[in-house]
Image (cartoon, rainbow, N blue to C red; front, side, top):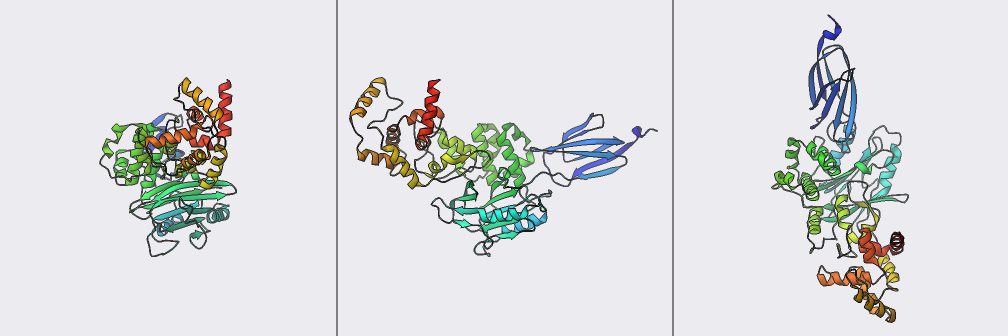
Length: 473
């Protein structure tokens, strides 16, 4: 009997639970033996070397298996989990145990209270050679503040749990309900993330480090069970949902058991609901129609953007960067958001390179006022509107050539740009449009570049020059 005729019973499994794992097994001649979605295989194979290809979400790993006897292969899947949950290489107990403790008692303030904000950051590798730098970076460069610039809590060795050996930093505290910002600032590099504190939820931010913060894989989670648990799988579900945001075709990777589990988490259900609103795949949302969801600002904003008569609530910010992108796009026909609002103050410094809404600056209103005052010194008596016909344009041109803009006009326009006494009414929208149009050709440029008029206004020279060059071609 040849060795090739002898069959061996082979069991292949993984230490981690990976719902939706795709496995492909090929032999030494690259013949495909198995291709299926499963977490384990039981096969009868001839002696030889086989290649197992395993893919999960957007991660791929290969294994070479030598078959020479009956054997069970128990494999580790090295998916780079940001949260220290489940049984991955990056989720060892020296990460997960401090996370569980820190999520259940405050590191800042009364330690007998359960925190409603939980910040966890650690190196991917406990033995990273640069972990001392990581600890210093974490403790010195993260802080919290509210929309008014108050509650500027800087993380430090006194208000945080710090483990230099494992390169772990945890900050947890009780905050009042409302909007806050998490800021990272180091040598001119800044990222500011908006987040909310809700009744009945613990807001969690989890981050891992390589040689620098891995913001690309960082995430926010709004937990209605108040506490991190290593065994929880919702963080892996969040990864799958984000993958569906990248390409809606990936939505099919959410298995039936995944979708059932999502219904148990109002935050995850909200993200799925937002995904369906954006992609207009309403038929896929039917099974979630009666599921409790966390009413994130993103949902209200998407609904407001569909209603041409409704202005979005621009004193709140979406948490998903794709929704922020939708909010900032305008055709210059009306105020999409209120001037001087939180949204207006961050829109010029947005970053869309990661899933989460983030920016580098919350503009100071006093600085904006100084900028607007300079622009309004040259403002016209009448602004030229895109809807003006030829006769109206000529009349305004004549008046503007002979009449000086009164200081009262300039003062009123300044207040409009700063959002003072401005409401969501057709009359105020007209006042805003007239004020914008009194400064150069802001509306035309905003329409051309699909940008908010206030963004063009604050960067008028740059966009006006670009607009002129485009019109010369």
